[in-house]
Every structure is written in C-alpha cells, then in structure tokens.
Length: 466
Ligand code: AMP
Image (cartoon, rainbow, N blue to C red; front, top):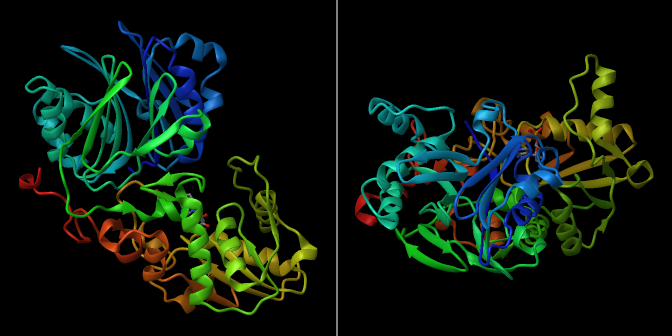
C-alpha cells in the first residue's frame, strides 16, 4: 500500500489550544492528502481524537475543533490511492498501553512491513488495520516497556526500513522522528505559544510561525511545555531525499531541506531550455503543475509565456462517462483551451512529469483541436521508469509509459511534434543536492533501500551505524 501524506505536530505552553493551529496547518497541507484527515490532542489528563474521510473542512467544523481541548497534538492528511481507502486506515492512529496512550501520524512507506507484521503476529499481537503505522505503534510500545524514550525510538529505527516522518503524541509530549535517510520531508518552527512541526514549511508560514530548520535525518526531537530537546539517534553517511517532492508533490512555496521548491522548479525550467533548445511562438504550462517550470523556461529562452490551458479548480473526481464524446467533456471539464492564445501557433508545452502518458495525450489532442500548429512537450522530470516503493503513489512498471519505450516511442504515444525530458544530471544540478543524497528510484531504478527484485544503492543503515 502506498501512502502519501502530510503530518503536523503542535506543542504549546500555558495551555494554549492546539487544535485550531493543527486544523489550519492541515489545510495548508491538503495537497498532500485528500482522502482523510484527523487530529489528536492531549490536555494534560486525557486524549481526544477526531478523524474521518474527506477533506479537512469536510471532517471538522468549528464546534469539532472547539471540542478538541488540549495544548499539544498531532494531525494527519492522507492521500487518495487505490487500496486501503477506509476509516481504519485514517490517522492519527491511537493505541492504549500499560503506561498510557500513544497517537501516531506517519508520512512514508515501510518496505519491510510484511516481515515486521508477521513477526509481531507470531508474538500474538492483533492488528486492526492494514496500515504500516500500526506496525510502528506496536514496535514502539514493545520498546517502551523495556527502555526509556530515546533508547526505545533508537531501537525502533533499527527495525524500520523505508521512509517515515513521524509525529507522535506520547502522553503530553510531542515526539517527532525523521528516518535516517531523510526520504520524506519534516521541518519545525517557532510560534508565539510554542512549536509546530510539519511535513512542509507552508504550514508554519500560514500560522505566522518562523521556520527553524528541517528535522535532520535520524533525528528525534521531543517537545514539552514550551521547550524542545534534540537527539541524533543515527548518522547516515548519505541521505535519500525524495526528488519527486521537488518535482511534483510539495507546494512551490515550501522550503524543503533548505531549498525553496519554487526556485528549484524555476531552475529546472531554465535547464530544460538549455538541454532542449526550441523555436516556438509561446511557452505554455499544463496547469497547475507545470506553471513554475514554464516561467523558468520562458525567462531563459526569451519565448513569451502565455497560458493556453485553463484548469477548473473546483473539480473533484468525475465519474467515468461512457462514449468518446462524454470522455472529451470530462477532459474539458478539468481543462479547457484558451483558443486564441494557441490557434495557429507553435507551442512549448511544459508539465512536471509523464507517468502513464494519458494526461499528456489528452491535452495535446485538445490543443490540436483548438488549432495549435505544433506541440513541443518538455517535461520537468526525467523519464519515470520504475515504481515508487517509498511513499509516492505510482502505478506498476507495466503502466509506466517510459518503462519500456524510448523517448521517440513516448513522443508517438502522446502525439507530440517533439518531446524532451530533463536529464538526471540537469535535475540534480537544479535541485542543488548532490546525487548521492537524493532518492532517484523512480528515474533510475536504483533504490536507497533493499526492495525484492530491484537494484539497490545500499544506503540502508546497518546496525553498527546507529
Ligand atoms: P499520466 O501521465 O496520465 O499518468 O499523468 C501524469 C500527470 O499526473 C502529471 O502531469 C502530474 O502532474 C500528475 N502526477 C504525477 N505524479 C502523480 C502522483 N503521484 N499522484 C497524482 N498525480 C500525479
């Protein structure tokens, strides 16, 4: 099961209410998950959780937020994927154990989930969901029965393989952990009443907080009553920051691992022109994911930026309508052309990525119907040739259009006059993080952790490295 999610943690002093801040932070992270949302808070004596299916405003109204009394808490939004879409998998996950309650919100994906679950089931542990977060919860509780907090989390880290950014509510303490490879983002900031931790810095911005820094790979931070303490539980020689966060997933106004996503995307746009010099009348983005790249491309090339497509921002999931005519209506419901901007013109069309190729094909067909003379597709990621096992929702290898086709083959599938992808080197340069510290699994087929049947760059930590 692949999970793309957003997590939040808030720790206030002086009993200031945490739920409203968590609610706003989840709103800012809504792009990271639209399937379900949840908040858990602690008021010093008891813990309260509210979670449900849907968008943040569908799950919570004002009276719900008012009822969630507590000065420390965590929150979660979960992405819509094919499997496991049910209330049992909503987070935060709350469990009770001998010494109290633990609530966990998790962004990431464990690749050794099956082994860990089997191991725990053999010991007689019972599972209520098919989410890997429950495995984390069981392991943590087991450790807490034997060790103090730091040692417990350190032992936990040794067991988990894969990506995990965790916000954990342990009694009235907020504990946050980022996996030793730093695959998924996590950062924290200062607010008037205390601290906020979030998957992306935009959540800190909207609360008028001040970003302090990213949580370091392998670091645990414990927040308690207006103070925090950091514990570096493991040190990895290299990291494996997910490059797709920069390409597609994160908001452009977020700062991830010290880089403003907007700047990275502008640089990729400029690099795309350097790598694929193109003569055209205009540069046009696929909204919204291609916009920043197209601006970068336009600035570097001197070709005018003009929007040829408009997106309906209020569309949810459309039901599948039979018949070709209705299918075209469904595409146009989502995207329509600004005909005079593209009629008779040669257009550089820019998008963040081509996954199956169906979106690009439909868009290019639509543009041709509106009179576009030539479509030169430029793509801000290199060809996606392998699935993601670490938390980005991607189809299987056989559904990835570039997995078994060369660029010319994909060009034919999407019906473009020319197709140019950014190179892996150009992408790495634009992100500004050395290749050894990035996860490029979907682009190279080489992963930072061991995955059966796949090649591995062997970056998973050994026990001796903790
Ligand atoms: P397609 O090639 O038809 O599968 O769709 C590719 C488009 O989907 C890209 O233009 C992206 O904007 C968007 N996209 C890429 N990755 C994802 C993802 N993990 N989840 C949802 N949409 C995505």
